Amino acid sequence: MELPAPAEDILNELGLNPVISAAGTTTAYGGSRLRPEVMDAMNRASNTMVNIDALNAAAGKVLAQYSGAEAGLVTSGAAGGLVLQAAAVIAGTDPIKMNKLPDTDGMKNEIIIHRSHRFPYDQCYLSVGAKFVEIGDGRRCNEWELEGAFTENTAAAAYLFSPFITRRSIPFPRFCEISHANGIPVIVDAASYIPPRSNLKQYIAQGADLVIYSGGKGVRGPQGTGILCGKADLIEAAYANASPHQFIGRGLKVSKEEIIGLVKALEIFVNEDEDAENERYKRMCSKVVDALVEIPGLSVKVVHDRYDYLIPMAQIGFTDEWNGVSRDTIWEELANSDPVIYLGNIGGPDELLVDPFNLTDSELEVVIERLHNKLVG
Ligand SMILES: *Cc1c(COP(=O)(O)O)cnc(C)c1O
Image (cartoon, rainbow, N blue to C red; front, side, top):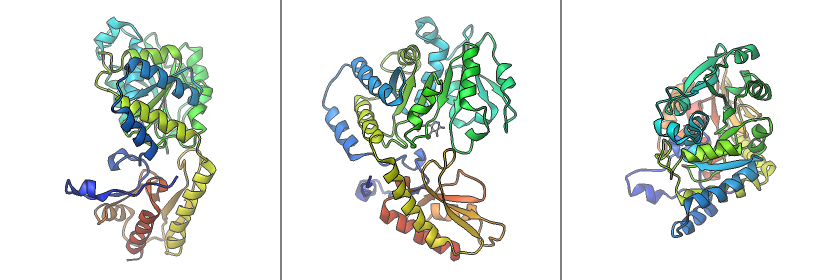
């Protein structure tokens, strides 16, 4: 899709200027550009009163349809969905337990997690009162370590799909088989793992019991939304703990506008031509490569795979022959320039990324020009 141009004046009123985000869907830089059709749907929803239980049920059916799951729920971001995953597996629909959270004394409250899958968002699980049982040594994990981790207090086994993390884990289908053989549900965080669109059905098909995706990242839906899908009984439990119900998830309200906006965004997202989209990204990244490839000491190429670079990105590798300013300095200086430019830096320590996801063509030109000046300057 062609991205709408930024509206500077709306930030200027606050004394701010837009930034250029070549760092993917990073929340701290604005997330993603919302689809105009979604904004229009939210605008119309905003003056329409509706029963929220009925709206959530209807929206959940759409999420279920597109994920291949039994049921779905719109959540307050993927992070809010993680809170509800934990509440669902620990308290279920038992109001006595739900009311006690985050005090989980006397409840099955252990969540098994790869040590390598510990990440800042996992505090969302802990906030419900979950206790982690870590497996693996941080770099790799054997199946027997998972086998040995189940106890009478196990509530779930958690799995993270995230760039630069997932490849070293117990393969997901085996993780599900082993957990299910022990009678334990598998809860998944795949917040930033769509596109590719096929991932929207993949984990449910492989056995996941609950999966969360961000609605405000790759789907270009409302920034504050998430897509929770999975088994009907667990979705029912997640919703029982969620707003508008007055339990631990009440602080994670999702508005009617956001629910309707996410449904609209998802409908458009799943029907888009992914090959054409990737061709566009590839063309954009090739421009970066063409502009920088001759610079000595750099290795610049387009990267795209199933694990780490989920859409085509331009990778700027700093080789041993590079003797210019450091990679970190370049990132810092661009982040403090006018206009502010954020490059992707979550990959290897010797690379920077230009992620085209949130770039208009004219923003890309600015990124290329500034980057070229820094690298040859
Ligand atoms: C971005 C992200 C989240 C949070 O998603 P939000 O929709 O911003 O709440 C959670 N987990 C992972 C792995 C993420 O990348």
